Structure formats: C-alpha cells, structure tokens
Image 1 (spheres, rainbow, N blue to C red):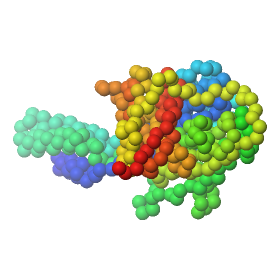
Image 2: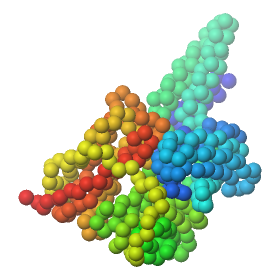
Image 3: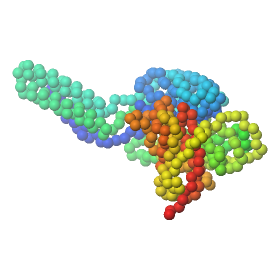
Image 4: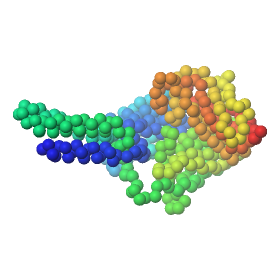
Length: 447
C-alpha cells in the first residue's frame, strides 16, 4: 500500500509540474451577462446574474437608464435544446430610472435565449447558462490532502505496532502529500482553467482561429424620414464569404451592438443599442430632429474574432413635423466643462481629457465609469475610449449598475489621428440616468 501511495503522490507532483500558464476563453461561470437595449423608447440594461447550480431560480435585473414613458417589460427564457420556458414581468415607472428585478428559472446548462418584449418591440438575446466546475488545482490539492490523511493514519499505526520502517515511510508520504497540496495552491494561477459546465466546445487545436469581418447593410425605414418623425434604423450583418447572417456576436462592453448616430453638424447625437429581431438583424427606433445628412457608426465583436466598426449614412428631409415628446438622453448640467491637456492637442500625441462631474459615487454604464466618443468634423472618423480609472480608493472595481463607487473626476487618454476640429461627447451615469456632455476640440499639427 505504501508503494501505491507514493506512486500516487508522485503522479500529483508531475501534474503540478506540467501544468502550464493558460487563459480562459469566453465568459466565466462567475460573470453576469449584460445586454444594453434601446427598446420601446427606453434605454435598458438587462443583467442575467450568474448561476451557481441548476435547476435553480435565475435572477434577471432590468436597469432603466432612460425610462421614457415606462411600461411593461416581459421576459421569457428558454433553452435552445427545448424544454419548459420561464417568464417574468417588470413594470418600468414613467420617468423613474433604477433597477427592476425579476426572478425566472433554468433547469439545465448550455445555450439559452432571453426574449424581451416592451411595447410592440421584441428582442431575442442568446446567451449560455454556465455553472462553475471545480478547478484542477483544487482537485490536486484535495487529493493530496486525502493522501496525507491516509499516510498519517498509516504512520500512527506503524508507530503503535512498532514497525519503524513502515512508520517512517508513511511519515515521508505525509510530507510529500503536504508539499504537493501547498504547491498546487501556489501554482494555481498557472493551471489551465477548467471550462464551466454548459460552455460551448472550443475549436479543435489545429483549427485556424479568427473569423472574417462581418459585412453590413444599413438602412432606415422609411428611407427618408422627416424631422420630428420616428424611423427605424436596421442593420443586417452577414458573412461576405458564405452570405449567411452573422449571428455569433459576442457580448462586448455589455452589449451585442453599439451604435452611434450623429447629424453632420453634431447637434443630433445618439448612442444606442439595437434589439435583435432575427439572426444577424438588429433594429432601433429613433426620432429625427433636423434635416440633412446623418452618419451611422456600429461597433461589435464576433466570437473568436476581434472587434470591428462599420459605417453608413442616411438623409433626413421633407417638411418638419411636431415631435410627440419622446425624451432624449439627459443633457449636461450647467457648468460642466471638459478640460483637455494640452489645451490644443497635437495630432498623433496622447492628450488627456478630464471632466469633473461634481458627483460622488458615479455608477458604471456599459461596464465603465465613463465613455469618450470623438468624431472628426467631416464625419469620416469616429473614436471611442473608456475612462482611464477613477475608482474610489479602497473599493473594488465591480462593473455593476447598482454600485456607486467612482470618483467624480473622469479621465480619458486619446490620440487624435489628424489636425482639425473634432466633435466630442462624454457620457456617464448619475443616479442611473445617462448624462451626455458635448463639446468641440481643436487639434493642431506638429510644432
């Protein structure tokens, strides 16, 4: 028995020694899933909380950033493989931003779809229900501790029976087992992460990673909306090599798709998150405000591929019509004034842009304390960076919409590609409301 015990311990040592550094691919089982959605005149974030086991209740929080007129939001979750569905409902109060919780249920791991209905709109959001597995290093450590316990019993028995050789051997096995257990703990960051239960299978080792960029068809319905009228912006994403719809978008900064729409002069600005109406098809309802050319910029990321940006444009024309009062994103408070250092940045050199919001405990939006969106005057360039780090000292950076822990001063680092005038917008969340601060920046050439 002693020989088998030592062999087992040596095998554990070898497993620890050969475990190399690795990084997890995809979402971890401990991470929540977030989907920003612009639906029924509201800007919502749907948060599907992580599961620790199944079957079990599933917490889904609907965060209303721009509640507009409010209304009922119906949630339905269904496993792609079939089975019973689970439903829940929240009612968003008019003009009351905040978090609205619902409890649904799941009975299995793997791919699911969350259907969100509000007003006459419907979005179907794909995600995976994941449950954490015990990591390899814990298995090694627990096995080593178990071997140590058996060896300790053997050592005590050998001592009682006056079998010194056996007792010494078992005592040595105890030492080896404890070394293995503590080594596994120390080397735990270098163990290959254990894929959670329900995770999709990864590509074969010899497969070529990466997928081609998606192609986009961008249109508005009607094709030439009038000022004051509502229109639909539709994006159809397809694979240029196969012609099939691209339906493998990954959650990217708490959304499947980020869309910025601006008028040519920049007075009209919307940062929205279209709903998924069909595989590869995304739509959002907007309201035109002024005549003229408008630019569309969409950012997204395919699974196993990098992020990309596609662009389009449309024209608002015809006689103006009175708006029906759909609320816009909250504007900046009087006195807000971003500071750019240097005051006249130089093209190609990093510039520092700061904004003192005057608000202690800012909440994250889209997983960040703040967003800086920059567009060239002619509309040919759009850049987007995130706040460089303003968490209150001593607190953890947890991207949860219910956590208010960011300092009032937001800081961004941005390099402007060419000299000229740029339109810029800083966005952050205050009491769940999205605040947008617009301004312009003059960028100089090399001195």
